[in-house]
Image (cartoon, rainbow, N blue to C red; front, side, top):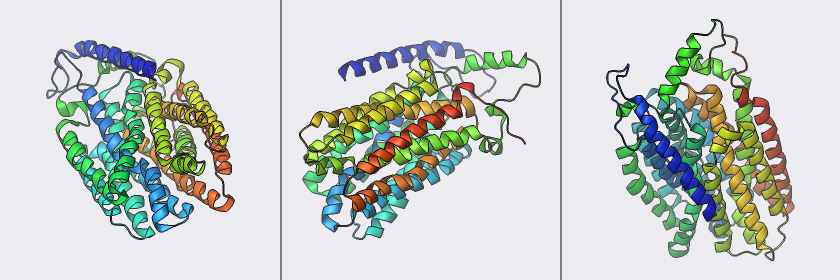
Length: 460
C-alpha cells in the first residue's frame, strides 16, 4: 500500500510540474478581454481538485456511514433489514434523480450559490436524523432530503468543474478528484468511534458540524466552477485551439463533435444510455448492494464491529488508490480499464462468498482490496469515457444522467440485498446477482465504445 501511495505521489507531482510548465503556453493576449495570463506557479485548477476531494469526503461520508449506523438502528428499533435498507435505496435513487438537474443548474446558474445551499440542506437533514423515531422519519430525512443536499454540494457540481478546469489529463484529474469518495469510507472509522463514544444520535450532530465549520468556508473561499471566473484559461486549452484550427482546414461535411450538439441530440444518442446502464449495473445494483450490507455481513460471520468497520475503511483506502489510477484509462484505453475494474470486483465477491466464519480474515482483506481497486478505477474511467464523447457545454447534464442511472439501479440494490437476506437467511444469492451485474456492466461499456468517440450524429 505504501508503494502504491508513493507511485501516486510521483504521478501527481509529475502532472503538477507539467501543469506548471503548460501554463506558459497560455501567456499573451487572449480573445476575452477579462481573462488574464496566468502567473507562474501552481495552476489554480489543482486547488479545485483538492477542495473537491475534501468536499467528497465530508458529503458522501454521511451517506456511506449508513453501513455503520445500520447495526445500532437495527438493534434499537428491531425493524427488518429490508425496511432499513430502503433508507439507502431512497437516498441513492433521489440523488440520481436530482443529479441531472444539479448539473443543468450549475451550467446555467451560479454554482457558488448552489454549493452553500446544498451544505445547508444536507446539514439540516443530518441534524434531523438525530431526532428520528419512526421509520418514515428516516425515509424522509436520510432518503429524500439528504440526497437533495448531496447533489448540490457534491459530485454533480464538482465533476463538470474539473472538466472545465482541465482539458488535458482528464483521466488522471477525474481519478484524483474521486479520491474524496474513497476517503468517505475511511471517514466511517471516525463515525464508528463517535458512535462508541457518544451514541449514534449525537454522531449525526457531529457530522453536521463538520459540514458547517469545515466544508462551508472552503467552498466559499476557494471553489470556482469555471476558469474564467478567476480570469484564467483551462489547462491544455492552447493545444485544443491549435487542434481546432487544424480541423477547420479539413473537408467540409464532417460529422460535428458533441460540442456542436444540442442537449436534445445528445439525449438521442445510444452511447449515452449504454453508459448510463453500465454505471447503473456497476455501482447502483452491485456496488451499493454490497456496501450497504458488508459491515453487517462481517458481523454475522463472527467478526467484531470494529474489525468489520476497519474492513469497510480498508475498502475506502483501496478505492482511493483505484481512483488515483484513473490515468490508466488514458494509457490502455477506457474499455480495457473498465474490464480490469470489473474483473477485480468479481474476484472480490468470490472472496466474500467464500467467507463462512471468522477463521479466515484474509478473505475479507482480499475482498476489500480488490473491490476497492476495481470500483475506484471504474468511476474515473466511465466519466473520462463520457467526456471523450460528450464533453461540451452540456457535460454537466451528461454526468448527472450517469448518476441518475446509478440512482435507478440503487432503488433495487440495497433493498434487494436486505430482502434476500430476510427471505433466505443468507446474502449468497445477492452476491451472485452482483457478479452477474458487474459482468453485464463491462459488456455494456464495450458496446458504448468510447474509444471510437461519436459514432453517428442523431437525426435532428
